[in-house]
Image (cartoon, rainbow, N blue to C red; front, side, top):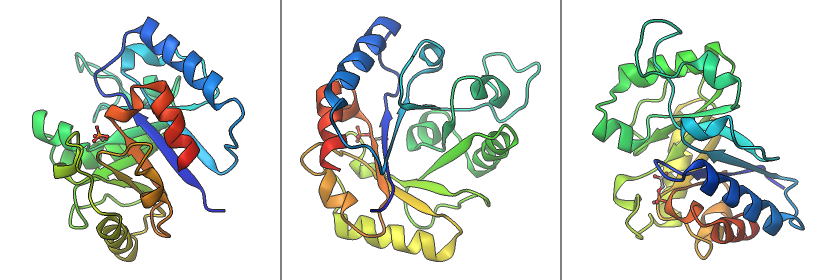
Length: 214
Ligand code: PGA
């Protein structure tokens, strides 16, 4: 059975009490599920990271491109490492609203590596540059994010194949309008190694169904 990454990207949502309720509801509902080949990872806001106590893995949605020091407002790799194993880098919302360009994406990957965090780099297509030493990439076409219109599994598979052919990437996830009804059509593709879930991850029952159906 291949390894599958099932990733919840909460984006800028949930307070600490809501996050705790979510974790309790999810853990109750996945209690009897077989998770053997599934790596379930939550990406909450920074303010929630230290407060979430769960058997699931944690990731940060962002990382400072700088090390510790005089960088007001930034959260650096050393700080993230206290609470998380993964870090999301280069999400299209960061590229669009926060003007993150390739250089920044590269520096963030370097910082993640320095502190032994596993970067999951988001790319918009097979042409997006991927910094070296990245092993997990999420293919997230902009037209599919938050629109209810996912890419076709055929095309996502094709992009995943191209990415693996031209880089050293080991795992390619698909993200964009994933829900419990369509998740399997992506994860059953041989070259797709999991899903990155935005809006459908905010409802613990729906996210549990996604884990179950993946
Ligand atoms: P979506 O978001 O599932 O709401 O489309 C995916 C993402 O942005 O990671």
